[in-house]
Picture 1 (cartoon, rainbow, N blue to C red):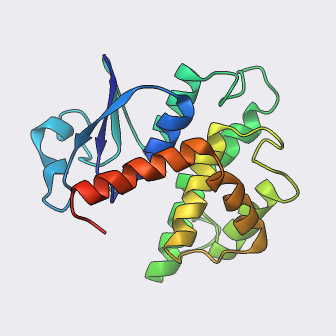
Picture 2 (cartoon, protein in one colour):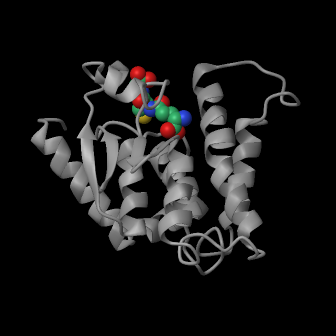
Length: 206
Ligand SMILES: N[C@@H](CCC(=O)N[C@@H](CS)C(=O)NCC(=O)O)C(=O)O
């Protein structure tokens, strides 16, 4: 049975396509119109009580949370290629920057955008400035998060940065811009972008 993805092109599920394309697995869409609130319908809520996209169904397995979905796909379908083995010393770096995206980059950007005033010492994301410094340190002087080898950490970490930069929520510093150029050159990223565009056109969206 093919993997299915609760998907809408204007959601984080658009980024999940890149993870699926990198993993090289067959998948089908469960198109869920977030403009019409379809994500709160029984079909999705029974699988993901948050009623949010993306949610992936792989046989009996349901995975939500974009980063978890990407890491799941790498471990399940591309171990050693997109995910370092459990005893590979690079595994810590791989996990570190994969988790950094949803737990530090996203809330730091949200906090800045919404003007939240929180104590740096108790906010898990520190400050926007410290998040940027740390994120740059992950890729400064290297091709990808793991050095010369691309991995699913780049889909999660790099995909988050790329999205935030596209939406002008993060400044495109030279370190980020050069990294994103390398990510954009990935054939799987280009295939995902083409499928997202095709779906937007089908739905009459920009
Ligand atoms: N932490 C989740 C966030 C998922 C999320 O917020 N998805 C949005 C679209 S990008 C959504 O489904 N919004 C519709 C809603 O909350 O009703 C993840 O990383 O996957």
